[in-house]
Length: 438
Image (cartoon, rainbow, N blue to C red; front, side, top):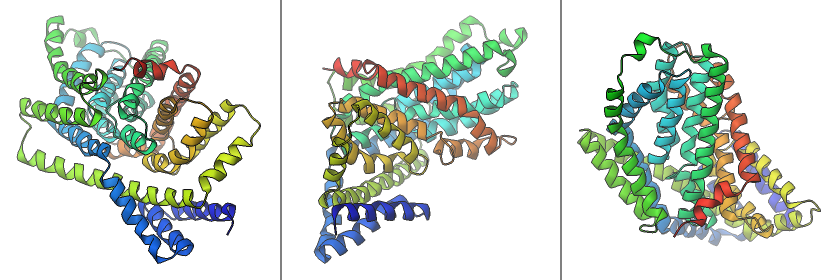
């Protein structure tokens, strides 16, 4: 068979099987085994064992269970509840203050945990009822949680960033630092949008009455800031150790786990039940990521072996268009794929294909990696299958429908698209901090 026909069969089969609803790992792994058998015979089944061995012996993957464990322990420690109390005291008196405070908490949670589901579920339980009781506009209340929760993909320490860095061969530390600027940019865009909307339309985010505002004195607010000390120390311990070169990202993950355990002990939540459930949750999530990785690597290995990567490179190099047009087309393809695939599957399938093209076009691979993650962040709140939308639906109070959630994220999707465009136009937003690393 010709290279073109083989590649066509591979991707048509991939799309058809994904549309049947089969889990991604079975689609990728099953296709890889069937294709390799028919192309090279029974001995090619060794491919699966070799790829599994390579994944399991990749040192950088050790960071994944460590960061997941840190996130789960922190979620159970009680820190988030205290943070919400602090933000309600300080931002509550403003029009839209609870929504602004929610985005701030989501930003801090992203820097502590890097797990999207944790932020969305926790804020859906804590912040959403509080905003609805205060008569906030439903779209502002729901949208700020969906959008703010996705910051965990971008702001380090992010498990998705680790998966991308290991797949692409780019430095995890540089990817971590590259995500800080865009993450803060998107957080600022969300906060600015909420503040401006609620200033123009105070009924969208009503401020409390004067009597309610007198409930917390300035002294009480200052004392409440003690709840911020542990999260800030944890963030500095993890990201600071990477930035100054004291620890590798994997070693910093160990620092984060120790910090999370200490935090849980201080809050008296370090129980045997919590540790047991955290270990179980970590093992389950890690196994899912590793199995998808093995399946994707088998699929991509066959794609490369039949000459698919060379075919794509020749097609791109033959296009008589500006390199920025190609970059924009890649971003549009990623947005389209995000409607049907999860971000880990997109990374494992697309990075081995797109990254050589990006290097051939003389774009910085760290910069492209962060653009990739900003795009993946957008996929999390893009209907019909954005994970964040369903995370929130699972914990939302009665009266919040799926239609409300879909309508609420429209302005935030546009803001994320604006953030992606700004990062493309001004690469320093991404590259300034990595360039300052030791």
